[in-house]
Length: 465
Image (cartoon, rainbow, N blue to C red; front, top):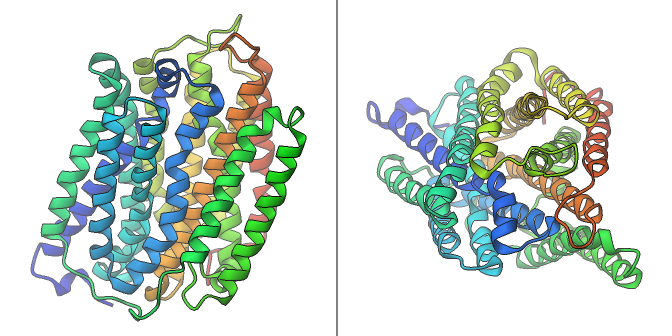
């Protein structure tokens, strides 16, 4: 393994710093949509389901790009793939900043989704430029800076959108990503490829997984109207099952599968993926429902907050998530992933159930959101860091991409379900969702999250391959 000392004095440290700056910039670009969903719904005349779709389309693209990015990074080198990926992100951010309507904005978000693949590539680079003992902390720090960028994005999106326009809230972080990419290209030493270059791209697997994810999102979006369109809903369900079955069959036969099902079959890996999915499914309720409730103008509930105020109120949660990155890495190294994940799951479940019962004051939402963000960061970082350092160096990208795909799918499914829940509880001709929809959403998320404890009981003290 190449260590940081193998490079000229200061080169490795500067390169890791540039990597952190890139994580900060991409985090900011990813997060500008969350606090401004209510504003975008009004400006673009969107329903809550369409707002939910806008908030997850970036993540869906990330679920497709991430395993490819991790595999290519292992094969061709992390830096080389990372630079090209960031070029796509810059194009996506530019499209989003110029978008005049929802379809164009969705296209920009699809291209921006490539940024999710930057994380496994960053982990590849970290492992090749730091000693093994420092890798977990460094991975946690990079993840923490990504969330720190989310804090910046959440804080600035509202004021920028209201003072300038919604176009500039995409343009400014896009400029930062472009600058960070140029800096990384100059400072980051090239890392040697770790896998043979003769394996092809698993295009059938990519297409089938894309179809399955698109069908799943369409099913969730149509959930409120399932009773009035049972045949369409049933057809989509059958289509989803067929696409998933076809994808599994293709991946089992592929010489270079998009997602290595053999690695996924390892108990330590699939348990980490299940935990990540369930935890992020629960977290997504707070991610989507809290800003909506802050903006809500119901009779006796909701607070009528604007985009700037929502960004400020979400700031403590972003700060907590930033701290959770390095804390999760250090906690995993000292106490093991099981202890960290158990603590996080309990904290998150209690916070979600508390929100279902009590949400009459702004501080109720702010405190609960911060605790949920902290718990999520601890859990996911501990699982990511432990998994990344438990497999062979040449499998780092693939292993961590499986966790990231699980994270993205958990968020996407949870947000879309929450959006469908609010849409079904919004009377025709009004934009005010019933309070019971929020209570149901938080309650279900808390119950689902608590189920993760059944899986954590089977983990070893540290997740090992």
